[in-house]
Every structure is written in structure tokens, then in C-alpha cells.
Image (cartoon, rainbow over all chains, first blue to last red; front, side, top):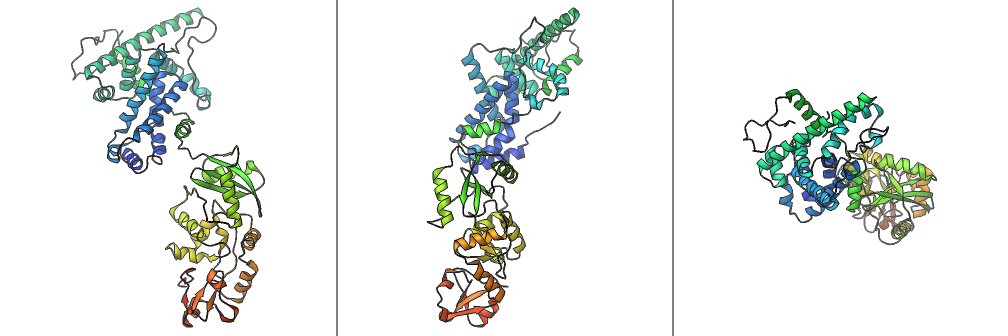
Length: 207
Length: 288
């Protein structure tokens, strides 16, 4: 697994550049964090298109927020948490507006695949990784079918690897609530994964 | 029906279910591993430019072509200023060359911006004050200093490479000055053609060869024939025997010396020995 961790040193540099010039400093910030913000959005929405819109919206809002910050305020920003918080707000607003979240999980009784999973950019998916990533995308689709509040908690804890205290701060929720949501999310995910595996076994038995 | 999380040091919330005996630890670990692997995604290539575009921060380069006395040129620009200028007939060739030069794509302008075109044409005719802005990002500080210094050379005049080197405080970097000028991304409008060899000969020109340099200098009134004549005669400076000041031959002050009072010098040492001081405008003393 590749690691593209943005270190604290990098953050200090990014923030110093931002403080000295909001416009010139913004492009490097997007460059450094687009992967993480997009990744979070993709896990929450399971649709590359939605994820791209969420990520774009996140950075646009971040830029507008910067206009109201003083230089010292900017230098003191915890970049990841700040951007994640904005991304989560964007995500929640979209969920609220849509009311009925479109689940990418759909059983098909025809000859097609049992799952309609929205495809990533085909240019970045060579043939051999397509098969290998199939189970990964099934998992992503199952996560996206979880209720939003459980999905957010689960993704932040187990995909992003954030600590409970950090998640609690990010969500303005008590640590206990966060833990409960993570546990319930994981429990639901395992249940749906098992159901999915049973379905697949049934389909295979028919072949 | 299991939970996947084990946090021994924190009290369990009432609703967090206990791990049933049928859930193997390995299975839970495998799921956690798969979840972590989901974090490994790349952002779409278009995200950055979409964000910058929406915020009006993108410095997307556009280009158009322009007819000039030295043939057709292509001009790339963005909201910081001109970014690339090249002679040529093929837009496709320019797109490729500009992309290689700038490290980013340039796109045809739907319509050449009228104000910019007017400013370029005024600049070509040498009219009015210089108003053009340049996007020199991607160049080193040294290269930028060289190009900005070349911008100070007035139309119809020339200066040696060594003059640029001394003026920017790097008197020994004459060769590097030559290299920086040879890689000028915005020829004509950043007048690298006004920089010549210290012996007075015109020197090379990257944008289409030495004849183009000659033609541009001639069009600007720098009289390349006269410059070459002086170079052959070994004359580097003009002095006035009334003011006892010496200048580069193309300096505006040198032009005002009447024929009866003009003195020729082959070197700064010769001029100083004759009791002359360097002009404060063209600053010809190179300390050589």
C-alpha cells in the first residue's frame, strides 16, 4: 500500500505559504490534500462523481473561509481536521438535500453482475487490477449503504485511521457516541457482508 | 453478527455488542485490513484545475497568433501576464513546445483579448510606456533577474552580456547570463535581442537565428550595420570632449554628442586615462 502521508513539517510550510498569500498558497494546499479529501468523499459516497463534487466543494469552501482568517489563525490550523470537517459538512448537506440517498448496491436477477458498482476512472484501472479491486468495490458499496452517521464514524475510524478523540472533536460528539456509532457501523457492515457472501454462494450454486 | 472493534482501555458503551464466539479474530482483522486499504485512492486528475477554476485562481494559459514584422508569432498568456512567445506557423507545434517549456498545457484563446493585442502592437512599434506583464514562474531567481534587467534596455539601444551580469550583481556570471537570455521564454517583448557581445558584435539569437536579431534591431533603430562597423574598428565607447563623459555607442546621450566633439575609446581604461567618467544613464563601466 502506498503511503502519501502529509507530515506536520509539510503542513507548517503549507500554512506559512497560505498566511503570506492566500491565492498563491492555495494551489499547493489542494495538491497536498486532494487525495485524502477525495478519498474520504469516495468512501462516504461510493460514487466517484459525487466524491469529486464533494472534494471540489470542500476546497472551494475552505478557500472562502480563509478570507476571514487572520495570519496567526491560519498558521494555527490543524489542516487535516479542518478540511475533513468541511468535507463532512458538505457531505451531510448533500445527504440532507437528497433525502433518499442513492444506494449503489442493487441486486440484479439478469445475466449481469449482481452488483451495480459505479466505476472509477477507467484510465486509472488497468485490466488486471480491475478483478483484484472487485471485492474492494463491493466492500465500498456496502459501506455506502450504511446509514450516514454510522458510515461517517466507521470510515473515519477504520478507513482513515483516526483516533476516537480526534473523531469526537471532528464531529462535535461525545467519544462514547462515536464509539457506539463505529461499533454499530462495523456490525452492520459485517452483517451485510455475510448476507452478500450468502447471496453470491447461492448464485454460484445455480451456475 | 460481530463487532470489529477492540478497545480494552475504554469502557464499553451499553449498546456496543459483545463479540460473539463465532467471529474469528482473523476474520475481523482481515476486514479491518480491507477497510484500511480503501484509503488508498488517487484524486481525479481534473480535481485541482476544477477547484482553481471555480475560485478564479487558475492561471490557465491561452494563446493566439499575431503577425509581426518578423513573421507570425504565437503568444501564450494567463492572468499573471505573458508566459510564452515563439515564432512559427503551426499552432500544434506551438502547443507542444509551450507545454514542454511551461510544464502545463496551453489552450487556444476563443478570441484574442483586444487590450492585450493592442498593447503588444504598441510594444512592437515602440509606442507608449511599457505596460506588459510577464509570468516568469518556473524560472530561477537568476534567470528572472537577467530578463527583468534586459527589459530596462531602451529600444534602439544595446548592452553587452557583461553589463547585465554586473548590473544584477553577478559580474562573473556572464556565460550564465547568455544562457538565461537564450532561454528567454518571451522573446521580442522581453528584449533579449538588445543584448550583444562585449566586443560589440551582435551575437547569437535563439528565436530564428542571427538574421532575425539583426532585423529586429534594425527595426528598432539600433543600426546593426553601424554596430558591426564599430566592433570591427575596435570602438567600444563614445566620449564627449566637452562633458568628459563616456557612453555605450547606442546610449541616448551618446547620440547627442556632435560629430565635432565625439571621441572613440577601445576600452574603459583608455577612457578613464583620458580623464573621462562613465555615463550615469547607460553605466558603461564594466570594470574589465
